[in-house]
Image (cartoon, rainbow, N blue to C red; front, side, top):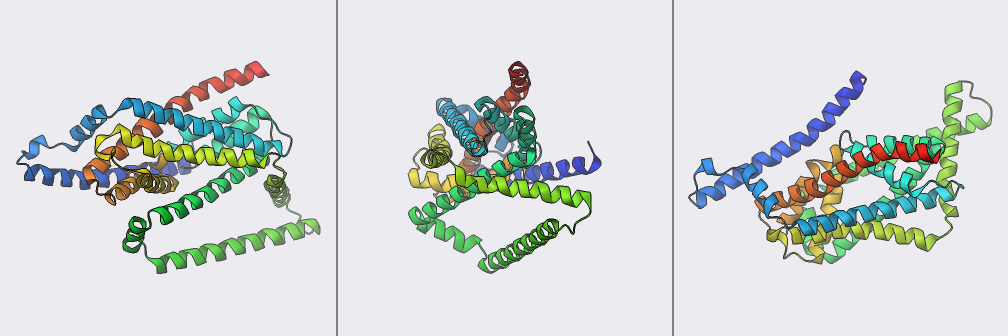
Length: 346
């Protein structure tokens, strides 16, 4: 492994652990204050012991159910992915599509976003699909996720406008948001202009550098694959898979409330808000959302009157029991099985 890769890995792992450390310190301080109010000696107040106790008290039947729902969402995603490939007459097997997804999630726990590269490389190898075609399919998949996330945000604002509005007004600097948004738009437009000019010079035969020509040809193939989304044969089924993925994600959060008594009374709308905050935490570039997921889930639960300590325990339970367990177990499982499966196919 190159030094740059090692440093990048250490940097992102460090971000995740730093967030977890700061969260732990703040929650430990809150726990000590609670112990003082109850006249409990500080030596008997260990947040780690409390979290372990909360894990033991969790309803593992509900956690198992949520784990099954998580895997169902991945099956839906694999089937939707196959639909995208079908627009260009590629037919990857469902096992390969599902397997590389899980290996990708597993890889993301080590280094943020590296899972995207891993799953593209594996599927391209196992199914003999050009890498630019696989990359385009991943971009389409992510674009659908962005659209779905926007729908979730809209629903949250509508259904929990009071709670959601209070959070935004106290935590969001709109002036900074406008500046960042404008900078992103300008940067995107300049990038598109640069690609347009390169492609124009390529068609006119003005480019001579072989690497530049190779890059433009790959980009053209990538764009062609992106536009193939127009050829989806069964649009209702494609939309159905998309809805199925995000409904599963929602119930993963909502049903996990039943696994931990202090949050079991929360309703459907609270589940939507906590789900949204957790999803935004997973977007942050830390390994598997480590730290950022915990922080935002805690913030969401605080809006509904859950104590910071109970919110912290719930965040650990849902993150480590479902995200880490499922992704590690099934990621390793498919990492072992896929070479065997594809060798037998060959």
